[in-house]
Length: 344
Length: 242
Image (cartoon, rainbow over all chains, first blue to last red; front, side, top):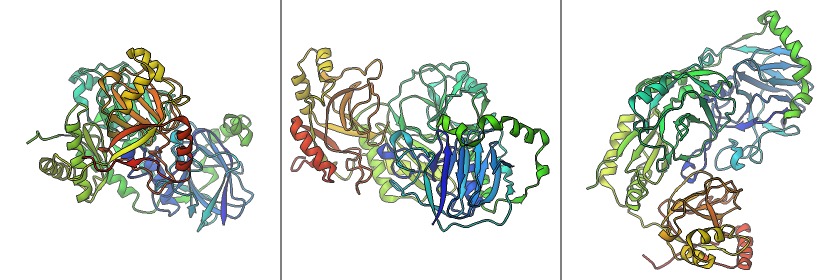
């Protein structure tokens, strides 16, 4: 059997699949990818089912090898810096990792999450029907924890790609993080009209303290018209709750299944990923859309994922000189497994 | 005939069917009756449903099931059923209020001017209704707490509670499976595991079921916890009571 060996992994690198389904009623969160569209794109690029298990790479970075035999891989990220044996790769690429080669992925100028999909099947035992890792409850993935150096992931039915690395062209991932579409509610009636308007207009700044559970926003606090306590009810991914301090919290993949703060609006499914990719300090505003508009956006997304992910050969001239130079300059600080191991 | 529920959008892939805004057994019954009806009918496109105190959240795939079609079906079903067809199961869970399990028993006793034994007796004498799960895997929110035990939640969280803690706070009761910091008070612990991911039936208590706690001593707790760990389910169904 082929093996994907984890040589180094920063905090927050986990195995995810399409998410745990059917257990929300028992308090089990779905987990699953923070950026569902990018995750699905990575799986599509290697010919896997769209919800197959893949590695979600955090800004903590990841280094992998293929000690037992070549592996076909797709790496899809917003702006992460990836290298194959030190040679720069595009942030979205398909490649074959040969024994002896090392693939390294590190945080870059943009993006908060990337996805590494393996052509074939990562052999991870599902728990409650899914492999998605929910570290807070120690569920799924490898023993409910993030990946770390020394982990070896078996790969069944491994397939290899053809030759040199190729750039993946997925224009649907060019998303503007500054404008996030929402459907108002379910508790927008806990806020006066001018507060709903203030919420939409923002601007809000994404706090750096966000994680897989929630995205915290900073800005002018909102005020509640009917108090900030409600009797707990269900929480969808993307629900924007406004607690007593008036600063919105957007509940993400590892959210709790129920909550007791009014939810002024809900981020539409197609915009969850662009929000998840916003690094701390990003300024955002919201746009109120109808359910019908949100469904149309969802349909367009499904359409984009229907076909193959286009690819083109990678040329050295793809990379501007400053970019290559930048890699060399930071190489001594963050390159290699030692730099990543320190934060693991 | 009860009033029609409010249908609220939680994005384009979930509806909240709201029957009220309070913790109330009659509201919960309507939530669960609708949940039963939807589970029986299983319209294509419904991903899953989440009953809560006062509303049912329906996650659906809007590319398969149109929002207004779903809302119409929900209103029709909600109008037809306000009572559940099936009687909820009544469970008896062993509970040890003794040290080291009843960590906060004395604190609650002091707050309400009773002895720790009286607090335990009040809790063990009550029948609780499981309204919903939430917060953490297998965290069961229960109503039915005697008025005398209705202490507010802690102003700040206490250190993580032990596994399978039996807790009260804010007028409610809970069984908490996974250790976490909490604003509730730990009155005891049950050897019964409401959540066991490796067990074929990972969860056996459903929202709407009732729970009574049967006091056991620390030695019995240890014995039952061993049996539970070996795969047995030490919780019992209460028979012959309606």
